[in-house]
Amino acid sequence: MSWPQPAHPANGHEAAHTAPEPAGHFDTLPHDRLERVEAWGLNSASMAHVYRPSTVGRLREVFELARRTGRQIAFRGGGRSYGDAFQNSEQIVLDLSRMNRVLDWDPDEGVISLEPGVTIEQLWQYMLEDGWWPAVVPGTMFTTMGGCVGMNIHGKNAWKVGPFGDHVLDFDFLLPSGEIVRVDRKSDPDLFRGAIGGFGMLGCFTRVRLAAKRVHSGLLRVFPQRVRNFDEMIDSFEENAGRMDYMVGWADCFAARARSLGRGEMHFAQYLEPGEDPFPAQTLRVENQKLPDTIMAFLPKSIVWRLAAPFVNNLGMRLVNTLKYHAQLRPGAGKPYLQSHAAFAFLLDYVPNWHHAYKPGGLIQYQSFVPKEYAADVFAEQVRLSHRFGIVPYLAVTKKHVPDDFLITHAVDGYSMALDYPVTVANRKRLWGLCHEMDEMILAAGGRFYLAKDATMRPGTPRRYLPERNLERFTALKQRCDPEGMLSSNLYRRVFGAEGPKTGGKAGMKSASLRVAGRSA
Image (cartoon, rainbow, N blue to C red; front, side):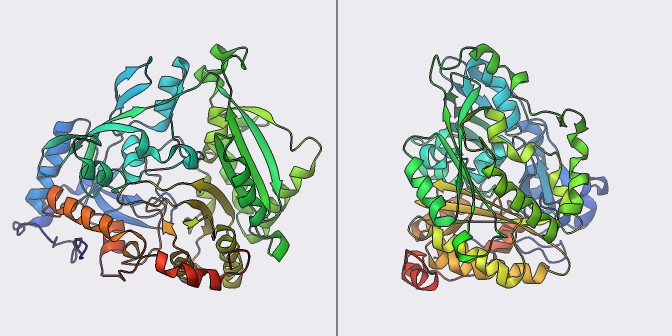
């Protein structure tokens, strides 16, 4: 089968699948709309015409403007994708952050309808005092509903409740033609499973209706556990999966000796049962969930990234990782404790603008998803390979997952590991080469990747891990919903802009077991 080919604008003048452009193409869009659009990871940027509509009517106007001028459209919500997912060089970027109203809320059933610009922060703060929490949240509260649904995000409970899309009841979807369709699993199952996770290439969410999770306290019971390597980490995930509500692992990638590859810390958490919290009305109050504005009660967190910047180098991060690991040896460090939902969920928000500490080159986050039988060995080999390339990840986070039925899916019956790598002028080419070599390792193990995080994937890679039937259905949806090819982005053109191998990942599993040492071999 042939994937629908995105346009490759030639000097910004041509877009495939559109009518011939009128004369004076560049004069039809105001120059004051041109903005520098930068990746969250600060590793790439491009110029685009940015529009921030506040109503569906204004959205339609921008779609019509794009049609008249032969431009293409990409969507941006919270702007938290690490790579080029919301960049659209010399084209149009639709920023939906002003469409941020709660449209309807049922506090008895925990069902809420939202515009696409509503953030996770707005969502949990709106429903918490009624005894509800979002079923799935990422590591930051500043992503938007449009982005969460479009990328089908996952959380620390992915193995238990699935991705964000599993909790979407229905949505209103604006097609490039200007038509709005209401979609649920029964009315249009292919569009439901294609738009969720479809990274904005089929249409625009204008309303999303979600089911939330009932909670009886604003607190979680957290269980920390020290692990000595990736084998212990995966074993701990498996042992605790049946009784925990959240699980996440951290690994020190500077530890390179065989027995300590993957040494780190696990955090497991459980909801409190009714009656366990003697003061639920207090712990469910928003002000008792908010992250503190200071560190040590006096240091404003807004300046912490500046203080941390001198440590964002190999020597500094080796020290930070080592101290973090050995801090678990202090008396009482492994005892259970109570923590608010927000404090446990949103670790990335503890230090505002922390990514600025990676300037000037920024960072990438390489996240791979590996079947459980290969995960420990593949993760260890990723760390070894990073050391051989001379670029050690400064942060590694692991989670457990289950498969889902969405067309563009990253999920596997296994585990993910997200690796934060610094980007510099000196290491950029080498770092991209490292990522490409890791791609081959992941693909050979039957693994997958996550478009919300990607900055390095080569053209054709998704064809190598997505099922052929999924690609065929998504192709049909693209032709049905966007026959003019109006929706595109730098990510789409980069990753889907050339033919790639059509073999699936499962065929490579045997070779993976031969390439990595350990128990799966």
